[in-house]
Image (cartoon, rainbow, N blue to C red):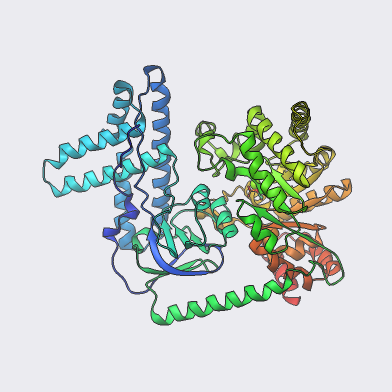
Length: 602
Ligand code: PEP
Ligand code: MG
């Protein structure tokens, strides 16, 4: 394999064009609260190693399809950037629109595209290498002409080529290893896999041009406690590496080169937040109980094993949602049973007897696992495609391996198994059958595992599951309400898309009715129900969920103490009355007012 460096960064990352300015404020979506102050580090998205290998003639067709997928994805990205550019001041919008139009044109039947296709078909090379070679040839050809206009076109071709290569390699943009300590990362986009690589001891916060508030990148930022603002129009043209940046993850603002007065104001706010965190610590050993004595279990959502310590340090009652996707990210192969078992064992043992709810693989949508890439490139609409439990049932080997690892980890402490994206009881029955087969095999291997078998529960995160909750309650042992996807699928709002983020409303009456529906079904069937979507971690919704009969909430560990503070000030009977009043309403504004008034009253 030959490793080389391709072209140059994409348009927005071209720092030579960014003007020097006094204090500038840019706005986006505040997805992870807190304030970070530090030097900007613009992530150089153009730097990706390019593999080179022979593609046999029989596989040329598949390689050409892989390339056209990457072209289509690049076009979609450019379209998104064009939509964002429209929000910029006129002159900047005009300049970037012109540039992006040029890039879009290159992706449509240009010499670059034709040349790459010819190289794949005739020279038998892989697509990344074909892109790199074609760019080199074009640059050589036009470079000899010494013409400023052509030089600019070559630059555009390199930028488009860099984008194509990144999309082909499906690599995270960067491992952030060379990032100076305390930096604010600035990038066009961060995938959840990229975010998982950030070390909060070294990175202070981050901002991106693309991304919505409820996507997994945002969730990961909140879990890591990293202030973050996503979907910032004009970001990469406004910031250069080394400039001082303030990220206000609560207000959704970033301030570039702040004045001395602004800096002092934000430093004072940082200190106030730190004081509040100290005050919250006094609640760690106190129970999460309402004024009238109703106990609420507060559990942790864990995306990465390193969060287990945080979960314990804030006194989590267990792990209410372990997203196992992290084991499948940032790698080209699938983890073995042994590898999964070791990681899970450490987490289960680390929780010291408190229950751990382990969710089976939930890749798909914007959570991609490179090793499973083919499943996602094949479908036109990944959020509705072969994702989560559908993928596990289609690939029994992946499911069985994971179930075996989970059952073995269950020998080290109490666990529950949770299934994502369930829409019908038949799916639960299929997994239950697989589970008993796997258990029988483990018994034959004389390997210790959870015996009796752990409870098998389902995520209620698709409207069909909420509406069919009575039937699901007959085959599932517990429910976990996944409000993130439930809102996405009920309102038809892509949770990761910043352009529709303003329509993503947890208090939409349709969403609340589905939550009530599922909660009532669980109470009728006497099975436990928890909320593990982001709504569960917002103090604003705690009274409403308690009022609907929910007694288990699972959230990012960093949220546990703020939710506990809210629970300790509320009365559960009054919350129940208020929840009923809210559910009688059909106007979202009135619903919000009823909830906020209740919260303000204590
Ligand atoms: C949800 O959809 O609410 C959920 C908890 O699952 P995820 O965010 O991982 O999709
Ligand atoms: Mg979900």
